[in-house]
Image 1 (cartoon, rainbow, N blue to C red):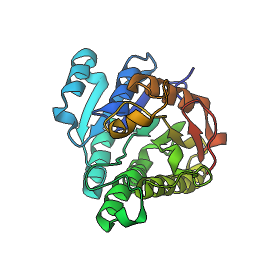
Image 2 (cartoon, rainbow, N blue to C red):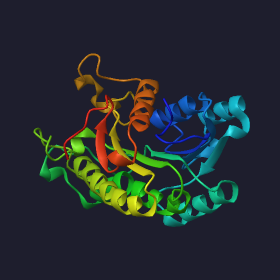
Image 3 (tube, rainbow, N blue to C red):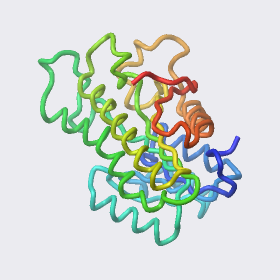
Image 4 (cartoon, one colour):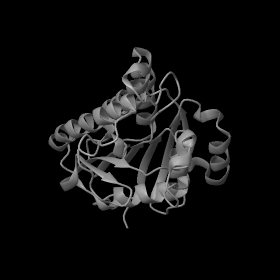
Length: 256
């Protein structure tokens, strides 16, 4: 399967949140593909990541590590400038940015646990960072086939919310879904060959899910490598006609 529909050349790919978890697994999987020319691995401390260093030792110049805090617009501006010096077009961008219980964020179970600090921290990473990443990389996505995908979560679905709880996380992912759906309409006008997707990767064995893994049914906790493979399958299955849509790891649509 082609990396993205309609692409007839080797791909330039950017992974945001690349230093651990699903982001690192995506970098690993992409570098194993013959149709990927280069992977831009972006994280707050990409240049000092031991795991990314190991990948760089194996793949050389095909892996570029760039430090960037996607919650900071100056950092995003610098990222876009640096990439544009070496690359005129990105074919695939995947944002794995997201927090649940760090940097001031909390998995609230009741209204009484909500705080402004927690809400702001959660929205800054889960909703604002991915859409600002897209904003600043937009000049690199305006020609030829280009896909921007961001990891969302099924709990961000308003129609699927039956249990409540996790106020900040649910709301921030719902906001991300709306932001990207809106962006897909603009990108279709700018580049008819563009695709914007939100993807639920399933519950994956990462730092984000560790406090809650005891409640995950047997067989439904995925290794990062498995989730990465499924994400790439979803990306490869959906082109411009599906832009602005929301998919699960098993390629089934999720209600908004």
